[in-house]
Image (cartoon, rainbow, N blue to C red; front, side, top):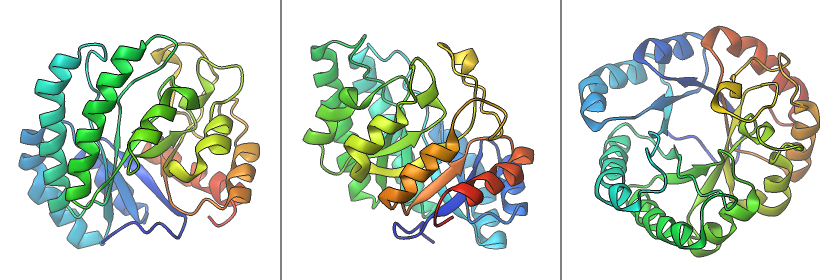
Length: 254
């Protein structure tokens, strides 16, 4: 079971087994599941496979936060091996696409740090390719310029465009810049709303329409560019039906 790259597919975010079942009961074609610790994934493996068999649902992976983004030695010794273990388990769950957080905002991360992180990122992307998985880096505070070098140096690297994150720390939603300068790299999208802001507390993950993000305009541009891949609603399961209605109303092809 795979999420195809030639058809727009809307699924839901699931942080727990219970939320996976909630997404299943909504009749959505895929759940983007949290794969944080290899040991925990192994404990939940049979339950995840059982839900997959019962509902015919597909999974996408959402990998853990990296910890201290400046400590490249710890990232090399601990984070990269963890991601590789999770990628190996992802293959067993028939996962073909996963999202990774690997912060490299040029406003705060220096050239040397970014170069070291690109080296580590290439290692993870190469391993993901061996497992048949597309690895997508998610924008946190970054703009296009922060990812540009990584995109140039790692051809197989793709992007998860988080439209909600694009509203933070920016006067204009950064999704526009990514769409206009790196559209061919966007292989997955996260959808949620907020009121803008500058910190983690402002990343509210609201139902579409409850914040200030102009999704109608963003969806129009995505449609004009011909986006045809996966979209995850990163909202509470109870907010997914209403959020899905907004997506279907404004995103061509949904």
